[in-house]
Length: 112
Length: 112
Image 1 (cartoon, rainbow over the protein chains, first blue to last red):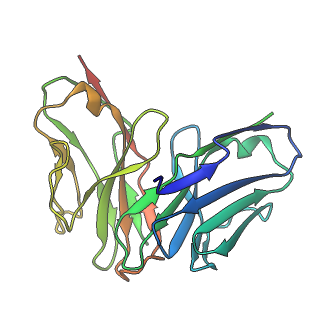
Image 2: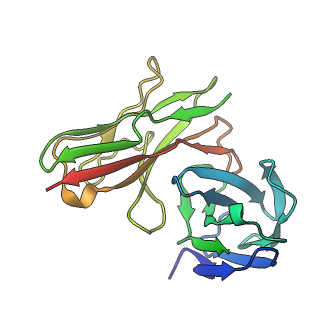
Image 3: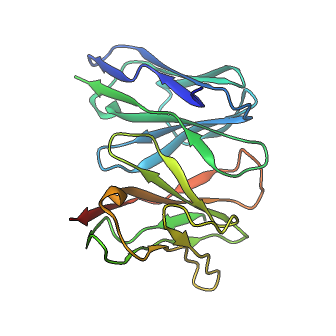
């Protein structure tokens, strides 16, 4: 029944490790997004995919690599994790005609 | 350039008092404006869209194109309104892959 889901919910890892976060939406939306919410609650867009095609890439370090196997899924892989990557990562989706975004529950990443 | 500003980082009001969360934007065309709410440690949820002109949980927001503002108002604040509120703007292409720009957010605290 969940519209936008993310796994895992929490991720604690050491600096230098590689990790992935998965996102799935069952709303039939064409566009999916990744946002980073920092400790000051500022929400910054990272990537946007439209029907598996990368549309927006907001000067994110190339250690971050999104992958969209189909339009219902958008995964985020992060290489060589750094302390500054600690944040909450939100996935979102949106329908073709614009309108509101639907957000996932977030993944809390802590890099030690 | 698209930009959303929310001048108040923190706003405290007493229960039953009126509340207004300010949002100003800059955009050269006809944007679509939204308010999202994030309760503690939860996902962002849509509160209002300017085109729907609804009242949700007692909140209303009017788009003022002359002042480029989309302030959120509620006549009587409730304790359960305590949350983070984000104003967001989407461009005029009216497609799902329009970039959505979020303001920095205002943390509302309703004092019992």
